[in-house]
Image 1 (cartoon, rainbow, N blue to C red):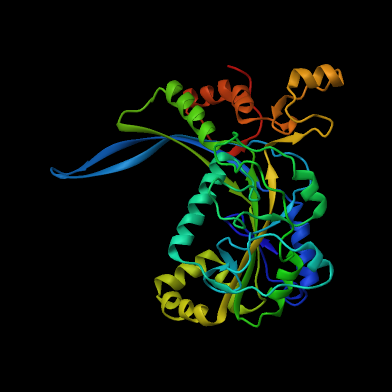
Image 2: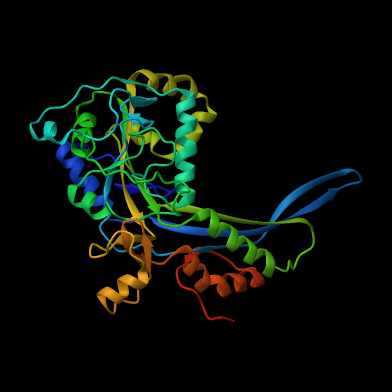
Length: 388
């Protein structure tokens, strides 16, 4: 097992390609290693370089670039399985949809060891675009994969595999009410197929060029809101020390160490796991003319599961009453912890972690100082420094 330059973990262990139980246990172990969430800030400007009397080029010059590293909640992440009607790689080279299932599993049938046969079909271009848009909205709003968006087809959202985790997350509150959430939030159902069953499918496949990808997702913050706040702070405090034109500020979010891939232990799969070798094969036209066509017939990808890690979340308090206000709850229960509380239709919820607004309030002065200093530090700062 190794970590590539793009921070993806890749394993070519033969045992993981032959034993579904071993692959399942390996993925559970990898889920215990959280990804790294970064916020990047960069300032650039354009400079025109002249050569001779008439020739010139316009170059982009970076004035500063720094990364901030918020901390994730320390908890056991739930394992999720994509919804039956979601667009995903299910063992072929193209994305597919399990068309006959409406999402969720028949618990009694699963207990009896029965499974419903599903008609699997290739996802249309329209479905793929809709899925990409939904995933982008879900990420921007800070929602986990198992929360349905308004207007989404039932069964599109993911399911939490463990019954214990489903009970733990059933009454959690996410995002601004009524913006992207369906109301009321439907109950969390078991997936129609478990991670172990998908692992068995992968190991039983005789495809030559295959891979099993496990994603690690970060949720809990409204990134659209936070991006605007950081951008305004950097823009207001950056006084460019260099000449040039078109000064530009960029703010983005990225997650590293967020993909675990298992591939066969053969020379072709190992070669394709090296990005620079794959780049050379593309330049020499070997990949597009020989390997890519072969993948269409002898390749397959499984990307149907992952684990989710929270920056912040609201946990429903079981001793609260539906419709009860925070003040009424405090008056009835007595002194509570200093953690923020909020009222929901189901009662009162408690905040775990720090909201994006609270995090930004803590970091605002540091971000402003970094912009003024035109700091260049790509290692990732995980704690705010002194004010000035």
